[in-house]
Amino acid sequence: MIVNAVFVALALMPPILGPTARGLAFWMVVVAIAAINGMFHVVATLRTRTYSPGVVTGALLYLPLAVVVGTSLIRDPQVAPGTIAEAIVIAIAYQVWSSWNHRRHTRTTSIVFNE
Image 1: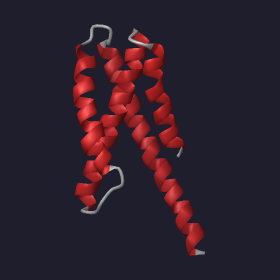
Image 2: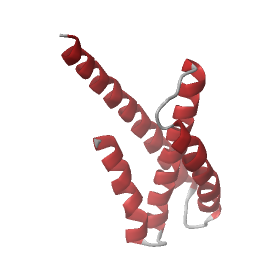
Image 3: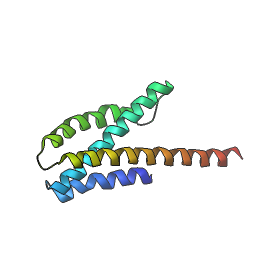
Image 4: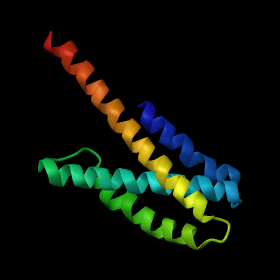
C-alpha cells in the first residue's frame, strides 16, 4: 500500500507544478516508473508462466503511457538529458524498493500464517 501511495503522490505532482521544467521532470519520473513496472510484470508473467498481478495494467496502460508520453517528454526542450537519466535511475530504484518491500511483506505474512 505504501508503494502505491508513493506512486500516486508522484503522479499528482506534475499537474500541481504545471508545464514547468520541474513539472515535466516529475512527469518523466512517473512515466519511467510506469514503464519499468509494466515491463516487470510482463517479464514476471513470462518467466513464471503464471499470472502476475498487475500484468494487465502494466501491458495495457503503463507501457503505452510510457511510449506516448515518454516520447513527447524526451522531445520537449525543457526536459534535459540529465533529467531523463535521473528519471530512469529513480524508476529502477523504485522498482527495486517495491520488489524488496513485496518480498519482505510476503515473507512476514507466510511466517504468520504458517505458525
